[in-house]
Length: 471
RNA sequence: GGCCCCGUCGUCUAACGGUUAGGACACCAGCCUCUCACGCUGGGUACAUGGGUUCGAAUCCCGUCGGGGUCACCA
Image (cartoon, rainbow, N blue to C red; front, top):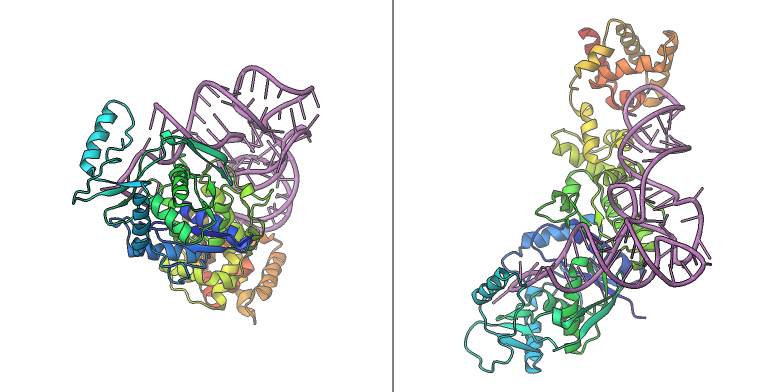
């Protein structure tokens, strides 16, 4: 069997959203697993709403997620151009062919006329479907027109969806929809069919909201004498309110918002792939494993609800297993975003290592690390409890021991604490916690020896001195 | 409203006629422990509903109810 060809065909009318990202992911995974090709095509035929900025945003989003395309914008390929706005000659050719063959016709009804009729029908409580007024007109007035599909008189359209199984619809439930405008700029179904065929697409994977457009598309394939691709319709992703995840209602639909929030691309992919697909009991799944395991048999049919807690948990899992070097750049980005003057390097990686398993996001990691980059903001409650006359000698003792240290790394610092605790006949907790408050302002930090080492001799001693002096 | 799709814990899901209906997130309890986390152990919560088919149904069929999608010169 020839290698499958799949595509992702977004319309550049805004940022890359989660639903689109998952559609892209599923198609990409299938292509990667079965040695196929993954094509990216911009469906920019809505001139009002399509923008170059959106093209940029979608490309950036896909790249951030690591979903690379074999053919498409910026990489080219043998089936270009990959922007529908540059392919009108092709649409015109087939539109005219369909008209000649009486499988389509020019319709001169104006938008206002149609709106008016729609209003009347709605007032009567009946759904409006274009009645085929221009079906049999023979004149060709010099007026704007649209090209409409001439539906067969009867019959049904059926297909076997790779995810949903057998689906069918009566022709009588369809209507003569608009294929393209006077200038032959196509609408969705027409552009989709022409391009999927021209680009050799063998498998169309998209969201379930497109199930209903499969029927007219299948009619088109039949009219054009082309073998249709296989279809796979994926379950929808719903917002917490159980409505389809949309840009308007749900801010979390923005892929790049999650990047700004400190989510790792691996985690977002992992979260989203599990919304609708599963592999036994596996939860934390890498890109490589996804490619190895993905198939449509295990894509479910029920819509999934966005679950922010699970995303956070997954992100923590990924954060934990990243190396400090991998975390360095995105961590730095977060810190600077928050106004800290951090520099890349050994120390930053050390802080990342110390914080990575106690954070859900890179943003949280940056927040938790504030005292490494600025003077701590003292928490009054922590002060009152741990910086007292009773703990003052402990702080002093630790300060003295630390000052004596030749090396100031964690391995050298830890024995100093142990020694003080032993000398004072106290548990580690009694010793470490006051120091923690003195050094960070609060009661939460990495293990005390890591904290001290990361702060460095000068800062650690200065903060201890200040705490001692303030009691 | 017409049409299309769907219906297992609160959420994501496993199960592909025979299981005490499994796992994960979240939640609760405990352990670990210098704090916070991580980790570990344990706990509660689900087959929408009514009828069939079958020796046997969460799994197959039909009805009901419920949810979502779609009905544009958007995609």
